[in-house]
Structures are given as C-alpha cells and as structure tokens.
Amino acid sequence: MKVQSLERFYKAVILFIFVISVILRLLVFDQEGGDHSTFKTTVMNFLGGVNPYIYTVQSFEDEKLKHGYSYMPTLLYIQTFFTKVNMIFDLDLPTKYMWKVPVLIADIIVGILLCKILKKEKFPYSVIIFGLLFWFIHPYFFMKYEYTNYDVLPVLFLLISVFTVGKKDFISGVMYALSVTLKTFPIILISIFLIKTKDLKKFILGGFLITILLSLPFITSVQDAMLYINGALLVHGSRSIQGRPFFGTFTYYLQDYGVNFYQAEFNEIYTMCALLGAQILPLYLFFKKKVNNIWILIITSFSVYYLFTPVLNRTHFIWGTPFIYLGSATIFKNKLKKHFVSMTVLYVFLCFYLAIWNKGLKEPATFGGRVWLDPVLVYKPTFSLIYELRSRFIKGI
Image (tube, one colour):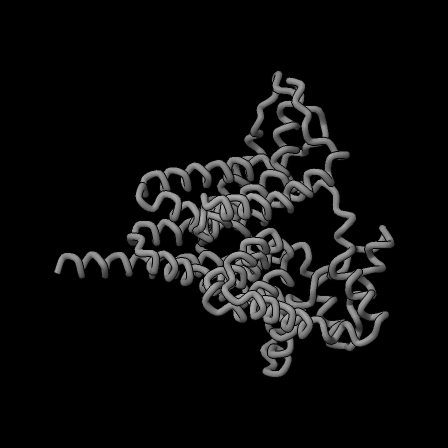
C-alpha cells in the first residue's frame, strides 16, 4: 500500500512539473525573437509564390541587406501551415503566438520521451524527476527566460531518431533527416547512427526520401536547385567565430598570463576538430569495445563538439541537454549520486558561463581592478526567470 501511495506521489510530482513548465512558457508567449520579422516576411512571400531563397542569396552578397531565411524549408513549412490555419479559420492570432505552439508541443513530447526512456531503462523516479527539471528549466531558459527560439524542434526529431534506431530504421532515418533540415548540428552524430542501424539501407532511404520531398518545391530546375543549395546551405560557409566558444572565452580571461590558443586563423582547424572529432571518438570507443551504449556514445560526440566548435551561441546548449542527461544517467546507473552531482555541477557551470555572455571578448582582459562578473550585467540575466516571475507577481501577473 505504501509503495502504491509513493508511486502515486511521484506521478503527481511529474504531472506538476509538466503543468508548471507549460505555465512558465505561456507567460512569455508574447515574446518575439530577433529573426521573427525575417520569418514573417519569408512565410508571406512563400504563400505569395515567391522563392524566398532569391532574397536570401542577395542578402548575403549585399552587406546593406538584412540576412534572409537561410535554412532548409522544414521550419518554413511548419510556420506556413500554422499561418494558413490561422487564415482559414479567421483566428486572427499574431504569428508570435502561433509559431510557439509547435515548439511548446515539441517541448512536452521531449519531456514525455525522457520519462519513457528512463522508465524503460528502469531508473528510479528521482532520476526521471531530476531529468524533467533539467530539461524544462534548462540553463538557457533559467538564465534568459526567453521562449523565442525553435531549437526544441530538431531536438525532438533527433531524440525520436535515436530512440527508434536499430528498431525502426526507416522511421529513424526520416526523423534524423527532419532534425538535420531544421538545424545541421545532428550531423555530428551520423557515425553513431551508421554503426547502430540494423538496416542501413532503410535508414538511408528514409532520410533521402524525406529530404527530397521537403526540397521538391525548390529543385524544379537546375537554376532553382543551385539557388536552393546556396541559400539553404552554402551561405553559412562564411560564418566565423561567433557566440562564446569555450577556447575563445578561456583565452580572453587568461591572455594576461600568456594563454592565447584560440586565434582567428585557427578557426578552420577548430571547426574540423569539432566535426571530425565528434565522429571519430565514438567510432574509436565502439570498435575498441570500450563503449557500446548509444547514449554514452552520443554524450562523447556532444562533448567534443561543444569543446572545439568556434560557433557557440546561447541556444546551442539546448541541443545536447536531453542527450547529455541520458548519457550521464547511463554512465552512473549504479552510482546515481555521482549522476546527480555531475548534472548539478554542469548546470551551475552553464549558468555561470551564460552569466558572462553579455561581456564583450574584444578588449584586452585585465584582472587588476576589474570585477570579472559585473553585477549590473549579471543580476537580471543570471536570475532572469526568478526576476521576471517576481516582477509579474508584484504587478499581479
């Protein structure tokens, strides 16, 4: 009887986490991201029969123009679908609300999948609850309290792909391709998928078919196909050091001591280390029979990628959140205290790392007489979730 009561209690806690997490997101549904106007223009042009990649290519060639839609069209289709529904039913909902609906749904499904995977692996409820908190109140959400990005969507499809690989390889290939067409980061895991599929032909076929299907409207001629490839993929080739890559940040704060191992001319080297290292290390561990578990292999890929990538923006930390948690839980399955400690340390570290994000890394770093974490920069950004909720309650929400 006590066991059943305890189980009901845990389930009630899990349900509470889901409800509170949804409420926290609904409170900031009115936010608009920096790319919102670009997406809005792109969708309206697409609905009007205009190829959005024409402007995209032009915008990257002309520095005076604001960069256009430079992704594969999966997100465009999602946004267009909701915009079309809004028009058909005359709902008159602003796009900033409509386009958050699929993100919220994806957020919830990722949480459900975490529960399912952890329960299937026979982890206790404490690990499931901690995992849900780690996902729903991840460092970026806690620090920025923003809900304007679409990074959850590729995470969902990637998680489904990992969950189904080796079981339903065609579905896994479809989900993997959907994830890549939303954000290209899943390519760092391709070597893991190739060694974990039982039917490689079905995996490749699923990925190939969905990619062609999504691209079909933009490859009706050779000229359109070249425009599409250039606008969706090649324009990213000019990206240099962006965000706060780990090596760049460490160099900034340690250059007074002669540490300067991250220089712009090494950008391509670090890119190759990030992409190839994330592929090679899991293969080495697998074929040397050191690691066979897919979650542990994935955590190694993400670790290498995060360490070396010269392009590391704040939302990028969302990409690896569920996979890192599942990998850590698997590594410390028989020593769960170490799992909780490692995840807590990682959470605090990422919060600390995000706290210094607003500081520029261009001027020389000097420790003498300078406070490393400026309280003005840190207070609100660091505790943004708490700060915003406090403000809302004071104003009566």
